[in-house]
Image 1 (cartoon, one colour):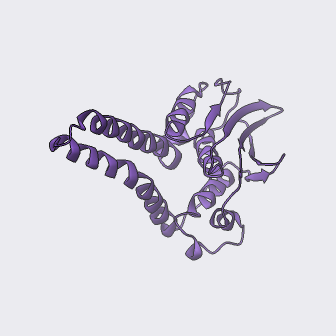
Image 2 (tube, rainbow, N blue to C red):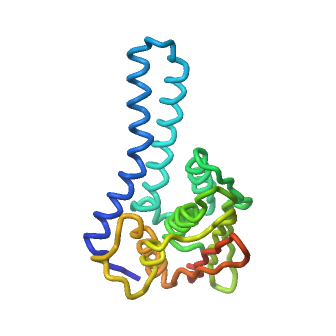
Length: 214
């Protein structure tokens, strides 16, 4: 199913991505400045700051290259690349990843990789204090089920995020904080499905998409 996206959505996604990159890239610059002027003998700390921040920026870029770009529309039988990208994204956070099975079920549709990564990013946002992020992909009876669960203290979706999930939302009212949830729902609709969200327990949130297998 083809879904058209308003140009404003693309602009907001770009703003969001730039916002996520400003911190680590700025830290790289700060580290390089300290290395260039090592007046206080902080070269080792400056190098560590630079390396960690560069890895964080790289992880963000590689993750969202697939989540937002064309490359994420194709996924094979092995989901290990998606798991590795997710693990790298979480490295600088307080969250841990539980993704035990990387074998995609038979009939996993094109676009499933993009769907999973966008669900992961949405679930990650819901863990402001860290926690556990679990991913499961299963198939059967002509369906492909993707489930991402966020569990941790104060797990919740922000008001801006919830606004982006509203089927009646005005694109003109979206913010950089809320655009990702809107885009994630559009990815689900392109798979002929929709994004389901529920709370299976206290301090937990579950995102689920069931698409037709190919």
